[in-house]
Amino acid sequence: MRGLAVGVAVAAALLLVAAQPALADQSSNPREPSVDIQPGRTISILGVGDILSHRQIIDQARSDATGRNRVDFYPQLEGIEGLVTSADLAICHMEYPMGSHKGPWTAWPGVPDAPPQLAKAVADVGFDACSTASNHTLDQGFSGIQRLLDALDANGIAHSGTARTKQQSETPTIVDVKGVPVGLLSYAYGFDGMPKPPGYEWCANTVNVERMIAEAKLARKMGARLVVLSLHDGDEGIVHPSGEQIYVVQKLAESHQIDLVLGHHVHVVQPVDRVDGMWVAYGHGNLLTAQDRKVARSGDGLVSMFTFTEQEDGTFEPTRAEIGRAHV
Image (cartoon, rainbow, N blue to C red; front, side, top):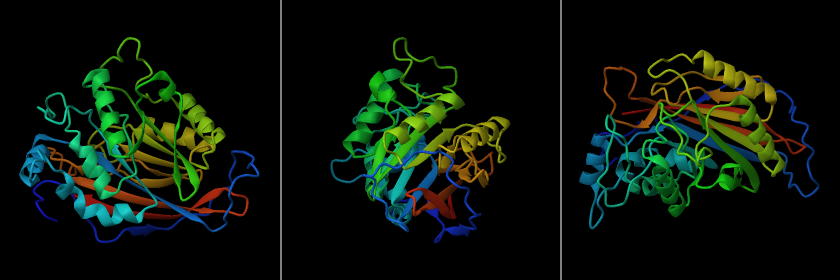
């Protein structure tokens, strides 16, 4: 990797996790005659850890920039490009709101305001979508959400978890993957005490099991045949899932409306498990970070790849789980 001072390095291969026998689809969603059923077709979905544009990350991006570019984050991410592009659907997690292209930009422990050029690097590496609901979502108010979504849209990155309009907040994100509609949902446990702007209470998704299941059902009603939910929850620095994480994941699995949960927020790697037939990576750790190493495992990150195979009846069953380690 060129220009990598703080960024990511990735294991050369993903480790295969044995898939248990899949439970039958309990959603009872009838397939319309127009649905294109191709038994044996596979969809691979990749998840990664939090993208944190700390001061050192921004400084490195300045050093790597050439020509008229102010910052360039691609060199810090290019080490995972092969893995990202090998997936049919690659989903990142964008932790911070974004500022203007010219800056100035801020970083934690200040109130984060990430460079929007980060969205271009994410696209250049090959990510297709990003979840955007995090405890930092409201750090720059509603305008920070708008700038983040503008940057993702400008670079062709689908997104879920935050919205510019009430209508957008009520419409699940659905992306086409090899002819298969896949629903993307994203929720955060809260926003560090920051209130939602008056009149914009719909701008960011908060963990609520009933609403999450209802949105998954709506996504399926709109045609989604797979539903992926990004969950920003847990206790920071703790390698075991919290009681809330376990409760939420169990309820989501019992609904049989969600196929995969990709976990974020805790900044360390947590277990990958299968709950009532639903795969969950409780915590992916970090993808891009310069966190304090007083938390020994805060430099760790997970790259997960889950493969779903189409059945004769048009449903998709999880058939393969592969896990790799990313670290600074």
